Image (cartoon, rainbow, N blue to C red; front, side, top):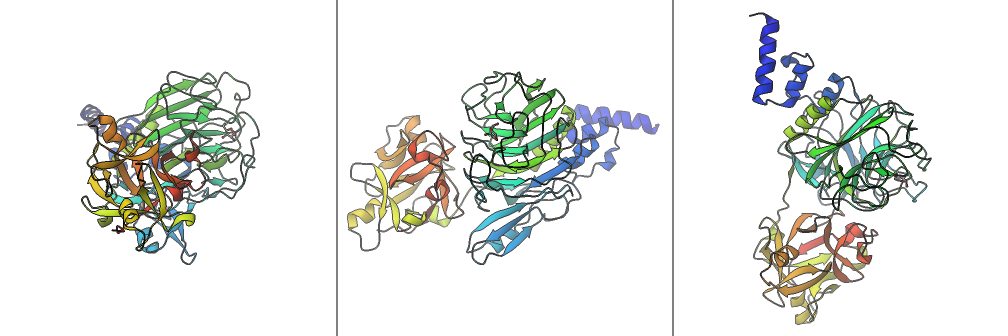
Length: 515
Ligand code: AHR
């Protein structure tokens, strides 16, 4: 059989069998299957599509099949030493070296290296027009997940955290075309401005409409919205988060909350698009594709070519999110190329990494101790009226107080892979939120009660202990604020959503009970 016929048949068979879209796309592009190494990364796919990566950032994996350099750098608190973390092998997943290096201390992510070879690394963002700086660095252990079955870490952005590079190479400027994607935690977001990844001003200032082009994720209603209550993937084009052609509301941009979310924005002369999908499976949906927004200043664009992560163009840093990987390209990628990249992301098999610890064993009694510097002598306790607060408790505290700070760990009432906490002082009563304030109460048997009383442990947002995520408000966590117990977001409409000290206030040590 002629080679060309064999190739045609192979193409048809692969497409019919649903074999990975990566391979299929390569075949459609006329590339021999043998040239598609199993280890190819998103940037190999973009390059094959004629829109090469000019920045490639990930703390979880290499984004080129041949990349074997550093992925990110951590700095530990104990002695200030730094360590580069690379992949286990070329094209592979991040090695576990961070765990050994950071054992018995805490670490911050200091650099997210650019894998494209252009040196477009992301480091601590400086002060900007909207907020002082330098911004906070992400705790290195706050976003543990699994990629390819390997334990890895994402970049956990609490409000105040930000990375930037104002001196880039190869990033689009002016009206030049570019594409970008980011894989994010779709359950971690905020309503402030602006959790972004992408192209921004090179001077940290808002220099006007069209001077940015970045992926935005969150439920901000300041500029644009989509359908439902959010969060939404939008494009931050400066002085506006855009969900479609119109300023404000665009019905075709749906709320998306996949635990692992692929978010895509691309833009070229009088065209741009928003696309997104579940990073774990399935394809990308196009939420907008068309002409530049119906507002002045965005056509042509005035892109400046800096790169931001976690902040707005003017260093607005009032929002939050978690970043696992992302790239920026030169040229406007085709939908087919992006679809192939999405198949490659699917193949990673991003998974949550359930936090397991002997200190959170179901059936054991524990105390939950505050970690914020103000309050390290304090434990979470039930008051006699059923409200919940923190107060200093120690071995010689009155017995009633020591018992009030005791919690029996139970399998989560609404989700047995998470936890509920039964009060040692009031057996049968569970820690729950109501009106986003913490109380203890006996179950009334409703689904709402079960959900309000179920919390999923994660690594502590500050890098210490655990944070406890509400099962029905996944963007809110157990927090102390003004010595009172709340369910709080990292920024939000309640006073206790205050972003200051949020990471610390939501990080708890699960320790021996006081009685
Ligand atoms: O476009 C939304 C935001 O507006 C930008 O991120 C920021 O630079 C400005 O405040």
